[in-house]
Length: 113
Image (tube, rainbow, N blue to C red; front, side, top):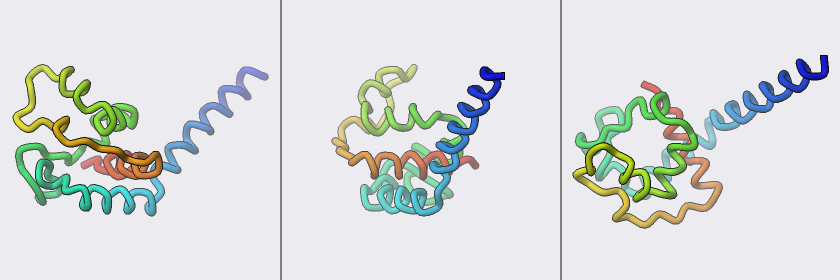
């Protein structure tokens, strides 16, 4: 019984983190950071921005952890690609606060279509 209870608590804790990530205010904050950082110069979302690197559906393709790594360890993520990208994101130096990083991840995770 104790193991079942612990598993249930762990599942609920994980669901709580997912629900927090879906906070509309956090998603909106991430969208504003995306816009202020000029991400559309290289990326496209919903037909807006550079067609070369679309982000539509990225939230269903990459985990939150992978998205964080793309924003914090960009060169490492590029090196893991099978082919070098035409535009290297690693040439930009990002220094997101923890709050801004989580907002960006929440926004990108919301891009599921």
